[in-house]
Length: 154
Image (cartoon, rainbow, N blue to C red; front, side):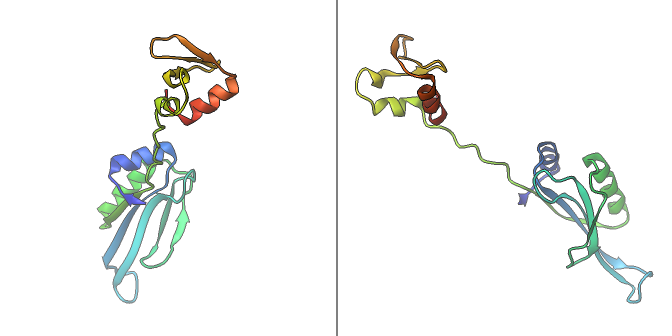
């Protein structure tokens, strides 16, 4: 997980990636014996594809999860109410997007071939390999063409 903005959270929610917006409250509370509170509240998608949920509890514990399946709008409204009660945002984290690795150009593959195959600039799904002028260099099976196309960008 990486630090994120609220825009990143919206994008993660839309794409199903994991995220967590975490709030803490430490302060006076006449409801317990010590008179002090130390608690957290967060809305999160704990792992990719999971429903959005609210989790809360004492700081330092796992807490308990509730309201699974709420939408991001509802979670943000609840967060605003928590801020009004004195909770402070501590962290906003999101699962990093998957890195898309660029394919090497088809010309790298063609350069390793003997002439005239080293002039191949494009291969279509049907197996037609053409040079930069669009002239047919060779015809290959569609399976071979698609295997090459899957490994190299045209």
